[in-house]
Length: 463
Image (cartoon, rainbow, N blue to C red; front, side, top):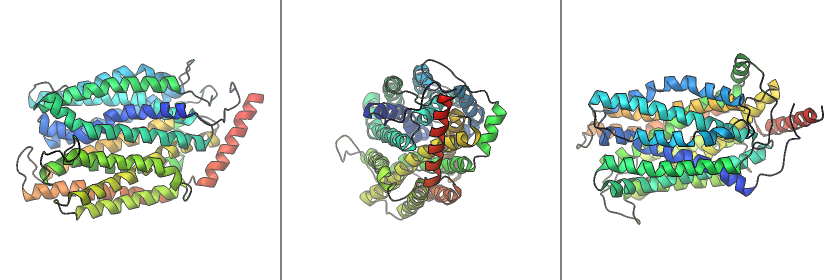
């Protein structure tokens, strides 16, 4: 039985900011990994592109088990702080420490480096699961009102954008400054700085949020929960689309360092404040993402979530194809296409997580059981799978086109770099847009579902 009537009051500004800071903390790491990890492995620590790509894929076997398991565990957790919030404070320090371990860079043989990479990457992904599945599931119980959850999602991805923007704008200068010419040391000290900030921000999230929806004690079996999930066609569509979207994004941003180093005559001179051409490109891209997240509610006045998701994905694919034809010396045109593409992603990712919580509510509407943790954790698995493939595909492309780190590249390897930076992500965003045609939860359905659940929860109180 629910303990109290659902609290439908608007979320305070402080709570929305506090919730958003949690994804800033996540993106201090995940943005860092997405932009720089493949480059770090190949050009700094000396792992071959194919070996790094294989590692990204093989470690996903662990995630196939850990993500749904974490969701099932979180759904069954009962504490005085709620189901999901406790994990945010419990896992903050282990998550930060394992991120630092990933960039420790010990002097080992090639086989030793690979073993270390497999272990350290698997551990940080497990820690990411343990803190981010509950963090994402918290969104489903932070308010019973879909509009308020969308607002919280907007703040989440505003701060996520600020997190990746901070990473993009400061990492390369910090690596140069802290390493004093030694990139390995520079990466190690830079990630340590972000580790400390990550812990502080996660603790703020825990302190400023609360769980307003109090589901009945979870008594259904794992089999029943999984059955409800796979029958939720909209969730299936969204999860597959999420994989495609994240493959497209990570393939794009993890290729940027290679594209700028080997194809664009970038030079090392600073062209705006402390930023060289690579840093400025990455930074302005994430400024675009920030504006995409900010403007999503405005766009939702014109389109429902499904329609806007289709439009943003197709437009993104078109911008990526257009970027291929920009000459390497036309830097500002390249920046425009890059920022426009990431702007579209800012809209897409904000919608994606709001739609995941709609899918969680749909499951409760149909089954009578709240399994937000499982719904979101399975969704997180789709995103981490997309991240792995998005990092692996450029690695395999580099290997296939004969890339050799820190050398003058052949015309074939340059063509491979151009292909992986432009056409590869375009293919995945276009496919995601087409797939969203099958998504069933339109605006009227979400409104009807929300009203029915509010009525049901109120009846549980009076029963």
